[in-house]
Image: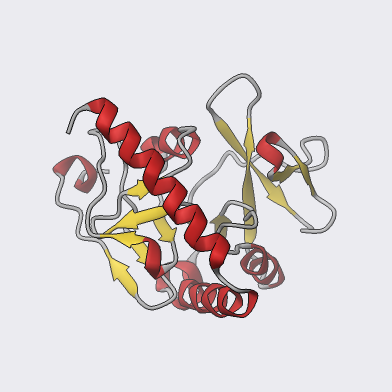
Length: 204
């Protein structure tokens, strides 16, 4: 498949996944979000991590807001992304309060208030919740096409956990050499530990 065909395929797949998520009724969405959150919290990696890195969910994404609140209540340090203006880079800042430390930022997504929140510089003993419109069985993701997480994940040393509705998991997604797969995929129906075949990732 040529590069142009891949871009078209990804665009079509993004629209399909967005439409599928938009069609979910509120009751079903809540059930799926709760199942995913509970599976994440049951993970050994989550229970033993002192730091949680996660996105702040929008309306069509798997909910992370309740996970953030519960992690803060449990005493974990929770860091969320801030998109640096004029770049495709992210920084992460710690939240002390979900209700007081966030404001509308890039693309209408809630971001940390920079003057109020502490910047994350130490990523030790952390896990990262990775967003995606779709994932495949090898842990590769279909993002929103902006490239923020791709750049961050290339250098992130901790456990990468993708969360996704099972209906949006594909057998295989197109990916490039520098795309970084997650190590664990959590859906509303099951948990999948990815076997990283590429030696480039085994060395990480």
